[in-house]
Image (cartoon, rainbow, N blue to C red; front, side, top):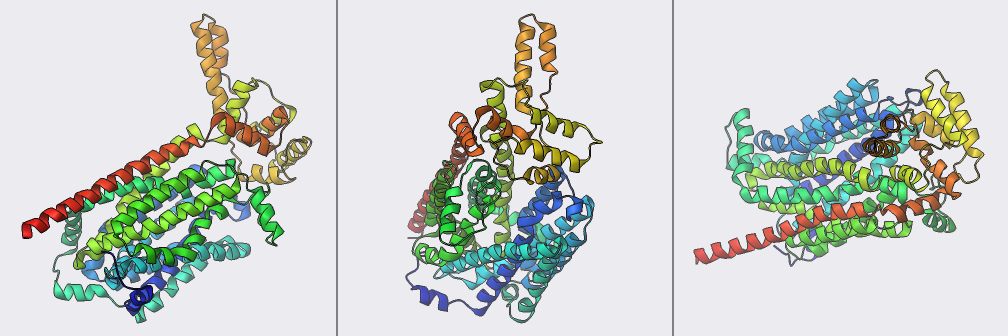
Length: 575
């Protein structure tokens, strides 16, 4: 229901526990994002550099399990929070997360870090329902929009500060990143013990629940099954989250490979902001994506106040449309300024839509089921995130991988499938000789690559890349081309020649694709990137994600009209 109260009047309605719970959420997100934003770098970094030295497949498995536990478990833990108390659930969550972060800092193997990650996933899953349930109890239809706007703003403040703290701790030692998050988690005990009101006590007094733990769990599941409208709403929103999560799962890779933000760097340098460029003269992609969080911190309250004058479901639909446009716009350009504009547009859509999602669920949930319903709100996120990662890999690999396009261009346009320049042979030799010292190999790569005037890679950068990425992808696209040609030769009766091509491996490595293209085309990396963009049109990938988002928008519009028609029907029946 739209509100008629002024912003000041809405704020006055918030009880003390509203501000306390939002502060707790901010600190929890600070600890969480302090780890999440650097965890991938840490686990694959060489042991000599303080990392765990894990493979990328091991990294993917850890984070996938972590995500699923964190997203799906709240649909069950929410019922226990309502049954046994919000504050008790928060104590358990803080304890598990404290030891999880602590063990991460002490972990020295794949198995021990995996265990710690699972603990943080479980702790975060237990934390969400009671905290969100508390906020749902402290807002009403009159101020829920501004209330969830405050919540979303503080989430992003925590998400913005966490990585900053992690960066400072990382300069001391990697383990202090995790110890800092553990310490921040401990701080949350103070406001929870002394300041936070447990609203679940009042609900249990009005409607006592004498069920045992198993019955509580079964009741939580049946609550979801019985509420058909809620299930449909969650399924529709799963499609939106699938598109929505691409800004964090896929866009950083896309920006890193395709976007030229050197003009933004130049402008910022002209006004005194220097030292932000990476080795290639661009703004790091994670900093560009972080414009989303910064926009939310600056504008969330204004957007929350404006959207509070409209129905939540209407604002959700509008936000979904704006986010869809922003994502496609962002992926349609290689110029940094346009990409930043697209991210800002996306952030406006996010501010319009995402808080309304939590607000809508909080308003539709029965008082005694607030935490249960807030726990179920993670279902579309889990489904959407899972398929977002799945389709991101498939679509990016087929429609946007710059290095794969580079290999195709070499094999098909330049006909260089069997041609190797001198430095290419040396790099491949380094990769195949297991007894070759890595230091000497990296030094040779530096020397050879720096001899080519068309390669703008700073001295030492190849050494860093080689040390951090000991295994570099083989040129699969050329091998596919050889297999295609080999099959054609066999069909033509040239069996021996065809078998040679079928068994042939190019040995071309990912790290050298751009240097080879620069040498062959006599262009710098940015010019080569533009050639590949114009030939292969990687922006098309975002159209496919757009179709997913559009389907969710259409589904939500039909859902809205269905609810309105049913409401009018019930009102007519009552008359």
